[in-house]
Length: 288
Image (cartoon, rainbow, N blue to C red; front, top):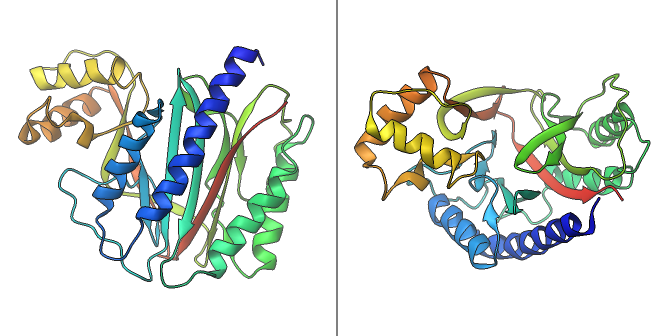
């Protein structure tokens, strides 16, 4: 990895660490998830980075891809498992990290298991380690603690302006013999649940990403596609980010047109299929 690229990753890492600590200080009973997300995204920008994706604040059985909607009134309750997933990029080089908090239970067993598992598997992220070896350790530690991994979610590689790159590292056992290679950036994330261990797509969809240029009838649709390519740099974005440029009453209709012609990709909310509680811990490492 070139030194210039490494320095950009290091800057993204430094911003991520500061923002993560800041985010933890925000999580209090009664606070709106909208306020948390907006403050996280603003802090990233203030520190010299950009959000690699909208701040995800997924609660309890909601496992991933919940970023608050426009005027979202959802608030944090004391016994909620609050997963905060933060992406920072510097010139397209992404640092991806996540944590889980429960206000009323500082030593929540799901959180402890997720953190302990990630700590162990990060030791394995080095050249030559095979994907199946990592996944096996993930599942073994989690099941030994009486829980299930979320088997259809994965750790993943990171590339410039690509937050889900090769390789994928499933949370559950598999036979994937792909090897970790020197120079890769790997975002290893562990999802632990007391449910069945599978997520399903749910609604509403709150996050979108540029896919390709396509003609659409509405001016608002054409403007959203332009923003997705330029301002958002083809990375995932939230409907919230369009307010002030696009009339809120036109956003949903314009996005619907763009999705129908495959100009935008949807990121549906992911929910544990049996409504089990889910904890997530994630960190990025440079394989060097």
